[in-house]
Length: 91
Image (tube, rainbow, N blue to C red; front, side, top):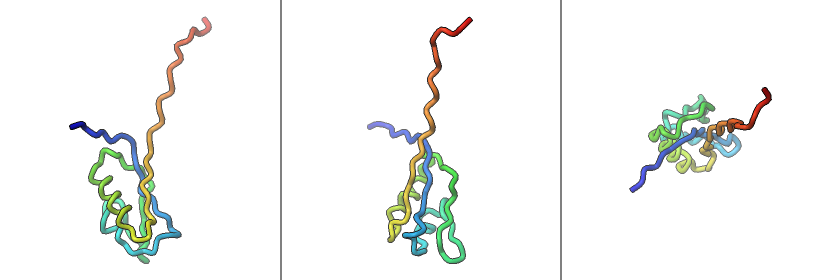
């Protein structure tokens, strides 16, 4: 049995055109989604670490539980470090 390492970040995104403000997302992912006074989701644009398994699982439940399929989990991978040049420089 292997270990799954979750690296990188994710952001839960909403398509406002598809959303009909049912509010299931706020019930399934209360740490990530808050509702405005009309019932539409307000989701932070701050990336969440993939290592936060509770937040990632609740985001997956919210994405799957949306009756209009208006939610999407966008995975963000940190940029790779730039390679260090090992050539000969001028002296």
